[in-house]
Image 1 (cartoon, rainbow, N blue to C red):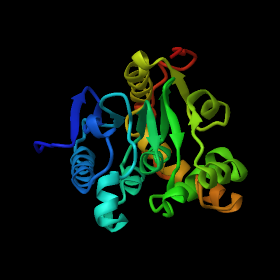
Image 2 (image 1 turned 180 degrees about the vertical axis):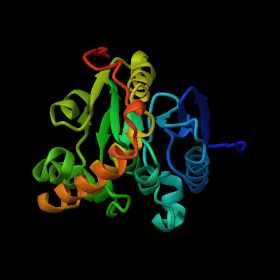
Image 3 (image 1 turned 30 degrees about the vertical axis):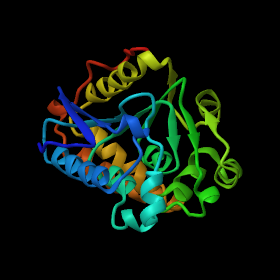
Image 4 (image 1 turned 120 degrees about the horizontal axis):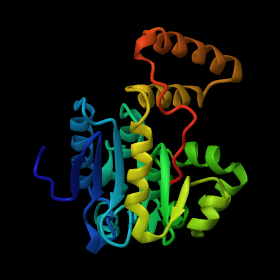
Length: 251
């Protein structure tokens, strides 16, 4: 994999960790970061040994959104052509966001595109698009209200007020809230639970749920039947795994 300057990539058994790596700038987004993220995700998608990606940020913050200096000099056009949220949505397997500190604007959009969100107690989610004079272009308006409801989404997107981790949990935005020191451990534990399933099922489950998100109930049921036939009939009885049934592991 390439020698990246604005992100770090670590590989472990079955999973990869990508970290935004501009901590002195609160991991704010510049075109180079977006390019390197796309390249890294494409490489990982081609690696049959990687089934789960954990996305986090180095330092005290996950991502503060677009770099302010860049915006002042070049405007939002500086990142035209990039869409990290779509890169996440298209990745063939679950992407776990492990977020802390500022999860702001573009960083917020990236987070809600992930499949599972683990938040540190320090995490604060905020959308400042309306304050700056921009509209979200990486899916926030399409995804946020599906997670927390239309009225709450409008409140956050219109007022720009921060949503702290515990309230985000109460609103159903995040899966877990953990002490900051346990953030990556909790994300890895979640990844290992996913990896304990039958091979390829996390990818198929993501495709099924995401494929149904824009469908009517009737369309969703038909799509589920189609997906189930494709996936379930692909596995011979001897390929099914039952050792984990009836057991659980608390995170």
